[in-house]
Length: 156
Image (cartoon, rainbow, N blue to C red; front, side, top):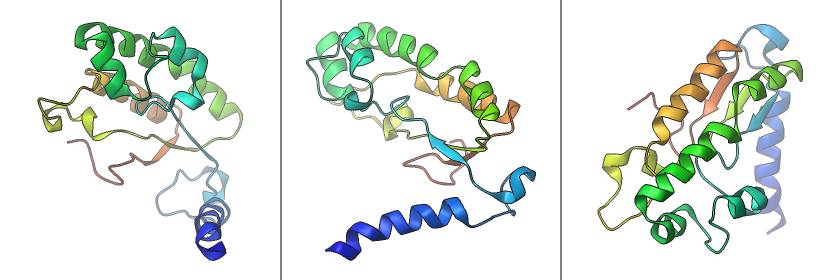
């Protein structure tokens, strides 16, 4: 059991310490200095409790529950406001100042809206904001290492 718990940590440390130059920007000798942009497109209420409350989603455990509770139109507007403000261009400026050169962006399958079933409720309109975030990353020479759950898959 102990090995199972340590293996992901070892893998994470290996990715942050081993220089890799084939796919990273050339600065920093290929060292990965990265952050996860959590709760931008895949909301984790524990990570953003106050924001989640302010969005009117406090009694819900997930995006799907919040959208069902608020109604699609109201929820889409609520999530649009979240996407506009949770991660901004200024955050990318600060990341660059701190030496961050890599980001990970968790994205739910529902970002590709034609994959969402009729009986599922998820916020709509996130792809436009994903494109803005990707544009900021390009502008500030920050590599996007993974589009979870779509690793290394180009725009669809």
